[in-house]
Image (cartoon, rainbow over all chains, first blue to last red; front, side, top):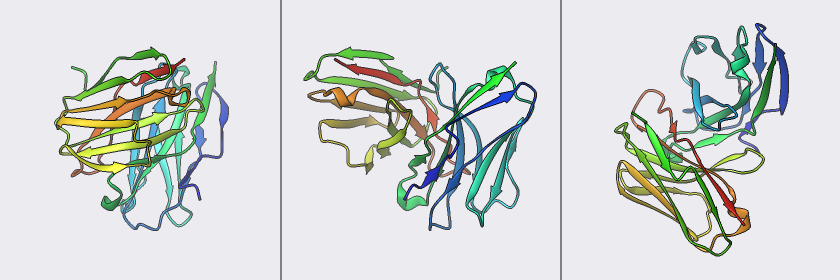
Length: 116
Length: 114
């Protein structure tokens, strides 16, 4: 079974609107972390936001927020007030407990294109 | 100033050749990683080193040999390159003990095997 699933291969969003990128995960480890990374066309991987499995509140970082629903095993990324520079691939990733060596397991990514 | 650097950025070579990719981090992190991103943009862990010790080896062919001379460096040597090795290879680093252990990625090395 896939550990991280991103069901939206691609989506368009109008500039200045909000967009939600879906991510569901599968783990039996009670201690895990969820990450979102952005990969623009230039290719680098940019860390956006983190949510720990024990965090009580949803993470926020500027225009990025994470809608963490633990019981549903989902960690959707919300980008508010989209900008043209937000056009990129977005990856959801999970780090399971220490025993897994801190590796990140990535989803397949969602390509976002912001329209002016 | 660069946190995680990789050289070279582009590598074009013939099948059967041997090549190396170098990675250095100046963040003082204790763990370094190699990831492979295929043509469909799927990212997968290959190796991880913690304090120069190999801790993850994700069923990568033994033509791939990582080497970590010290905590700040993790190199990847690939023998007998095959067409299927064409991909972007990312180095990353993180500090294991920390709040969220975010991994910082290098710029990637695009390997093309002809």
